[in-house]
Image (cartoon, rainbow over all chains, first blue to last red; front, side, top):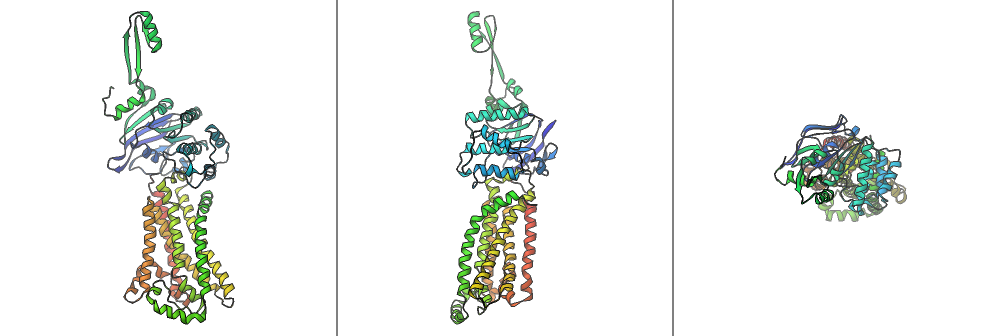
Length: 273
Length: 266
């Protein structure tokens, strides 16, 4: 069953900025990656999903509700991390989380507590004075604390240190195992490569490709057969380079990282499809 | 219709500004009320004649022989018009446009709260502040008069005058709020909100100078609030403030509709 459904979504800001004829769908309990460089249209797409802006044409739905006209219903079960965290500067982190809790009418605060512990966060200071990473953590807690069924995360790990990034990935995987549907936009290849089931790549407002992470990778696998002097060295070689040994030949595969795939879509390099 | 959590947060962040405006208004209201002295009338008249045009521009040319007349001349011509107006300009911008401009509106929108509710709540905060300022001024004036001029009984006239003033201030606040809902950029929200109100005030100043310029009064809504004529019981002037109230309601409704339909790049 598709939870998020985007059909021919177009929003033209003029000067070739915006998104054009985007179609994709995210299945239930899937982690979906939305990959693209800055300015490709990731945030614009997410603004549509969140009901902040209306499409020029096309439509998008979450759980069958129209994202703009039925935003209020959708927000009941959606958690959101904005691409740029701009909370009310005058509040402390704790004030902000308490405010959001009451504003959303969340009754049970236990999830907030465990999230604060998970991210080692004690946001007593004013948000204005916080580092980007701290703000990001407050954003994560705020997005997850009402136990949403669908998560829309706009570059969620920006500003986090590697340990916290790892913890964030654990969090996402845990949520997936609980059946949550997760939509992550990112320009960090490793982040989506590690976590996502399927990936869409967006370029200049148009979808360049949508595929499973595995398939995207496989499409860019290269195989080499190396002939060694004798079987003994072939054996060592196979072990060191995790290849498959046949007599004195070894077959090794080199997978391009998503980054390289990515560059092929953007750098104008030739596509070896 | 309104979200209480948001309402109280915004009231809390209005407090600092309200305290500043209360301090300013307290200073002026007590000082000017204290200056009233029927025996000084002659001196004031000479002074007024000397600077007649400038005094007239600020509406300070009324009958200053009575306490109410004195107040209407020296308080309602500028101080009680400008200060609550400035408060509304700042706050209206801060309640919608600033959040959209900075992006923090996304936090309010990423929750199951209707756009209509957000707009109504922010509007209520703005109007509550304006209402509180006028209420405070009224109470302060009544206290000052009671202490300084116990023999004068102007309470009911003063309350009606301030009710009219409240309608004018709410109308001006609704212009600012509309501007805040239309523009996603603080620059334009503030510019238009402040610009329209200040322009209208300047037009009223020109109209007050009389002569050929008097016709300008038909171009500015300040004409609908005419303290001199309200005190005198002029039948149009007494009811004119209700036109302002109606205008405020129309602009408020328009603001909410615009906010519920607009694109916010947050």
